[in-house]
Length: 201
Image (cartoon, rainbow, N blue to C red; front, side, top):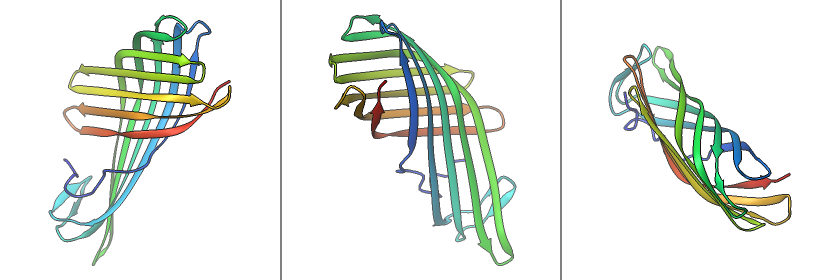
């Protein structure tokens, strides 16, 4: 069931924290990251539907609370020199989504919740270019199609360091996750710019 016509789960700010380790020679790269985003939308339903055992009727005011969590670990082996590194990448992690729908009717409060957590893994490439000690340009991409699951993610951006330890980063990222089995279906599509701070030690 798609709730695109019921709740506007579109533009929303999210949060990400990540740690990256690079071997002194730059050949090995390890990354772990955690992302989270929450949506809360209230609307007047335009149709009647049943979700997690509860029926919500058309013209009813309802609130949808959606939580998305992504934990990811990545390893890349790169070739190159001091300025440019490129090589294969593999990552794996957990994608978790939870949706709660609630409303107030003449007979009381109605609420239902559905959740899904899926193992996600992709293969692709990772590259970095350092035109100077204070500038790092990066891009990585991963994808896989396996047993009904279709996963894709990519990001590109730049890091600029004002000192040896502190800097800022910005760029653009996109992802599309589709998980399909006999009982449940989950599709996550997200894309947009990102900005943040960087601590290097």
